[in-house]
Length: 359
Image 1 (cartoon, rainbow, N blue to C red):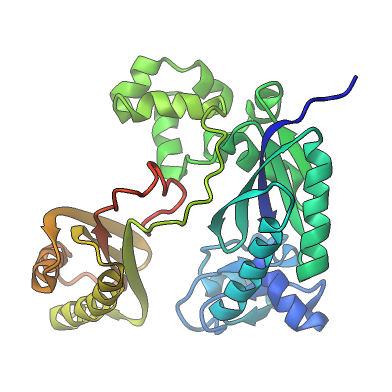
Image 2 (image 1 turned 90 degrees about the vertical axis):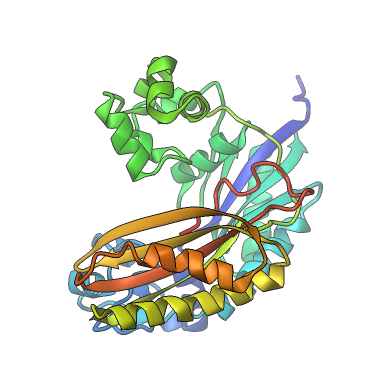
């Protein structure tokens, strides 16, 4: 009996993307532990952007301080971040995906995208994607197949590296039920800890959770939404409309801690100059400001503040500096970041940025 074609969501995720791009440029690095981060100097304050699988075997992961990563893998090759090279490689991959027959492509970032397609054999289509991407870019990818965006996204983890895996309503809990809630796309460490405090540790626990308890903890909208997330439910519509940023932010890590108030305010204003230039290019009013502070040794605080819609530069600066006043006096600062949120245009798709965090 023939199988009818039906809509599917495919999540394409490039394997160790940044490291793979570096290996293409330096073939002698193949099979070696490669770490990319900062300016490639582990004596400086910076974090790991990505690591090759060989480095990951030693416990190196994205976001780890570069000096700790270097300590874990003393013989690692540590390279500086080269954003233009990764952007160029990413654009070539996305062009390849868009060239696939019947594909609707929703880009999520440098190294991943959803592909919507109607087919009677999603596995064969996924393998076609892998072949085309490898042939045109020499990069490998994994593909998750799902009947919703959530299930496709989580399916990719089962297929890595270079594999294909399908998660649907039929086998979702078989694959995901015993996993911790943090494994779900859309649940980070903070939410998973709050769920654990309610006795909800696994995806199975979340599916069986009392919706009233979840609503009491997370609110009448988010509480039930987390339980639906536990089931892998959600939309199966892949939207290729251009991504519209909700805001712009800039941050910097200081090689020497800042303590003096004058230095802190100067650094905040310099970051604001960059953010305001980014916002001006968008042509949309600012509706909120934010401040990120990382105290030494590694404690991060984030402050946000809504403002009345404004295009006025001085108003945005003044509102941001109010947040700077909340920094604890005399406490050493290793990182500072500022952000401006903008009003969304009327034609921006609803829920357009669920996977784009402000920081």
